[in-house]
Length: 300
Image 1: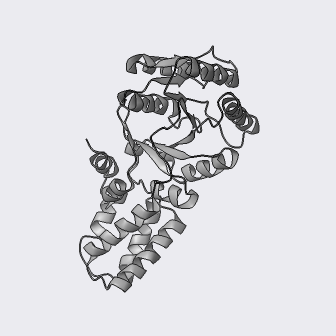
Image 2: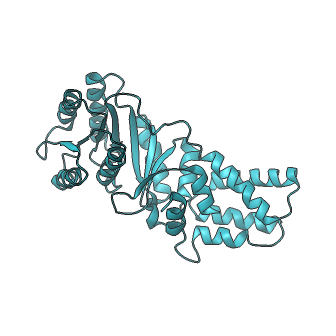
């Protein structure tokens, strides 16, 4: 199933859902002030965010006026283009040009980092890359076991240590192993942490430094994993993590679990951090590269 069909299936969850309300609004009728007010209300309630929603409505008004648009269907196409422009992800590439290419996954507890690490490894494994997974969540034995199980299923190597081990030492060993084994790609899981826990954020910075010292230029991508069902909390998480550690892109999980989905627009507009992948299910193949145009079309 294509990304756009996956998104349509997951976002149209109820008659009161974000997509359904947009669909009804653009069905028929004249373009008047009531139309703009309802659009603003739908966008805000769909987790697009107040400021982003106001900006989109203002931009739509200007375009409709300048192009002398009378039909709501034409207005929908303009809004689609405006949303697509906000979600431009051209600033990050999903292809790697270093060997080994190191990706570090970070985020709060329960966001889906460990599962996303396995799904991401599967994507690159299918491209015939030699992938090494790092079980960096040393605080949870279950996370280590989970990643070991996934590694066996998708046939990739795993570097792990005993629960409670120093994660920085683990990543030091992982970088040495990656070079010795001529690995194409390293994907590192990390323990969940809140930005307010200074010691845990400092530990994350230490992991980053250890990787960089052992392999100059790495990690090449730091991807923040956020849960789409948390709504506006996802924006706060991204903002706070980005202050502690430069975030290159986002993996948005559990998009199939929300009837709103506007958080994708909000998070990119406010923070200018591109969404790289979206999780649309629990299966190993249910992590797909993000397409701004497909997402906008699924909404509209």
